[in-house]
Image 1 (cartoon, rainbow, N blue to C red):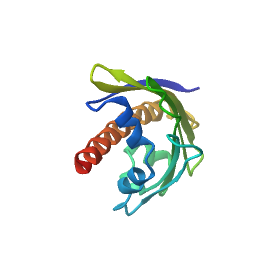
Image 2: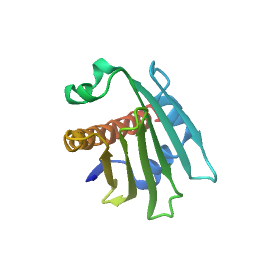
Image 3: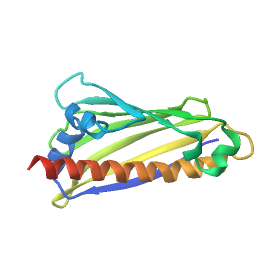
Image 4: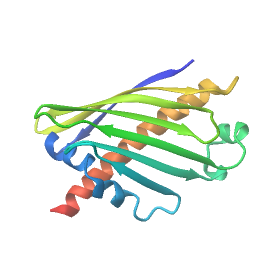
Length: 165
């Protein structure tokens, strides 16, 4: 069984600018430049598109207590964000994630469009954890973690934009 979730991420910058950052390979490598436990690989099949695959090693001691009860040792998390071209109105994307322990994963979609003078990204997805008894509780944690990840990505985009001006 999976748990669905939705998130709304607001940006002050216009959609073409936000999309331009999210499809910029330099941005993704900048985000991970000082990471000791993470890396990113990017691929673009056409201008204005990207597939960014992020790999993060999470030490067992950094995992929430409930997760530590069922997962022994470190986890390697692999997440991929993709974006299509921006057509002047909107762009679509996808996200997915898996863990090294085969506990389950996340899959979902993004829609980026204007919201007044700024941008909004609507994210919809589902988390599925394949752990008996506590899987539902861990799915709720995954939903919270996704919200934190989306907010962190927004902060990186805003910092990138501030440093580029």
